[in-house]
Image 1 (spheres, helix red, strand yellow):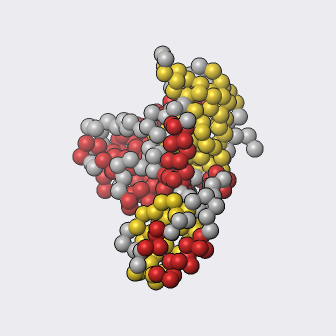
Image 2 (image 1 turned 90 degrees about the vertical axis):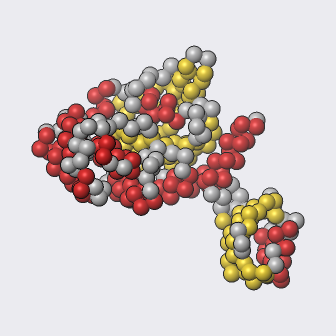
Image 3 (image 1 turned 120 degrees about the vertical axis):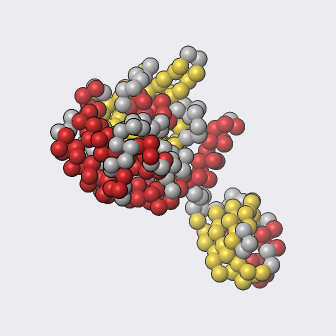
Length: 301
């Protein structure tokens, strides 16, 4: 299968600051890909090189199996972190205009815009000016402009910014549908819970360097299952057990990290002697924990 996106050892510097260094990644069709990293790590710089806003100092960018050209952008939808809507234009006029910029006939753009507005539950806003709408509503309009021309590659920089939980879920469900339709989707976000839920593959970059990369399941399998989630009532003194490296206790809801090589059954035996345990589950570390551990290790190195 020819990858939709292929970055081969791309690097970019601005004066003396390295933005990205020797980054390679590949995204196939029907894949949701998470580009992760702390603020200033190089995520946006990577996206900008991917779509030709800036050019890499070295390395190569390929889209749809060919070296990057401006023409390939007709097949790309991009939602930048910094939003850009015309505040005085009415929503439908703006969507049709954006569709025309992407080469759509005005009538086709209007039909698609109406369908998308219905899908994103903002039909009541189509006759209003952008400035009259909430930040979340504007975010959904920007989302629609990204998808109006039916792109094969969808790139979104912090797509959930400004959305409440209900609308964030609506956006997540839409992205899943697009993936099922064969679209390649890349999104950059600091929300680890959303990445863990949605992404097939990830690349974590820190200070411009790739530090963790691979399929979601494969990445998580590299880490020991030494986390326990438990619910209990009664005496909590078992949380001082020598097998525990650290814990957080929220009034009977405990999150525990074991020491390397510790036996969870030893802890369970002591816990049931002192408290009523209704849940005791050994789980793999969350992506957020992996993120903090990996970035922390790289920073300290």
